[in-house]
Length: 482
Image 1: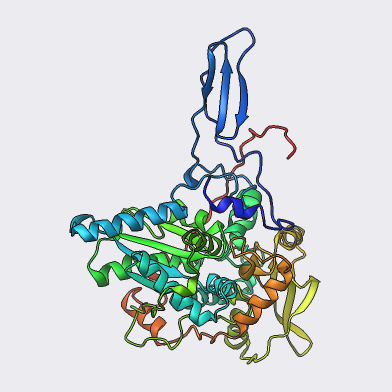
Image 2 (image 1 turned 180 degrees about the horizontal axis):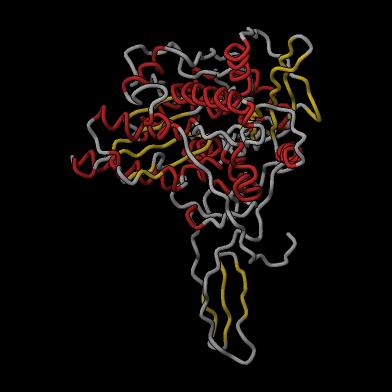
């Protein structure tokens, strides 16, 4: 099993959906016929089949993400899935092979290695190694370059583009939904789409009922995939399939997202994201090498999108620590739809701090009502309200993990004596100190105009949006209690 799996055993899965018995890929086993039948025994080094002719070790079955049965069990853990193409071992193998090819100057086989780092892992590793986020980002850049990476990027440009696309999608839906002939349309509430754990759950558990409400905007990870495999490929004059794109993310579900068939480009014969590595896996890699993060020489991150290099390596988007979707879209919609300027966001807790709402009122009328729902208890409550037609919200930022992405299931776990809640508070404070990105800037305008043929073009719609698929559950589960 991939090394990251053991880390999940240390995680408080109180608000996560645990692995399901349905997450099994049936494999036929030819058994030697005997009167008593075969007996399966488990030893430290594997499974053995005992027959009349002796004991035979059974072959290990590897299950890749493409074999996933799409049950509701691997939502936030993927614990029972062997992810051969999404492990630190695979990443290190590719990096070592590429370094060897460069030394031999085997140009036709050399890959261009691009690493993209999201802000939440930077925050997590900064706290772990007692660094500022800016220092951690630069040491991470130096670390990956020492392993053989050619380019190390942050996700700022993709985070910006995701917010711009999502806010435009919301305004379009709101206007259509409030039209007199669209009262019954499944347009609102619009539910955010950047969390693959939530999207996976929606596809598997609620199918066609819930999917029309989910925003079609791609997550920043997958937008970075498009930019790495197409923009960067054009810029560098390299075929997309010769680029190996690695992302550093705060949760294991990003591995599932990267492996979706929707994000395989048949024209380029390439996945947008080849490998996802997580905060806790980086910590494990550093621990194995016995080299703390700060021992690697700091290096500036690359900024290939324009000649204007940002003054910081890591950025925040509003204050939700999960991309700022509810915050940013609420402010934009208030201005765009009702010409109201909202400077201060005042959320009110509903059931708990992970389920809160914000309202724009004028003249005794509710103009906008947004919410943030983190964790599956709150998600399930939200879905039930939606099914009963009692959801008052226009937009909901939905994240599978309690406290959102800053508490992703693959973030570095707290040391002994520190609770998860205390750790989250520390990480949130670090996040609040980051410079705030304004999505509508010269770089996003340049990307839209030079690469996407305009902000509202068919190309932008095709490459910055995606679709979802209801998944029928298999009725093959055994009646086993875990």
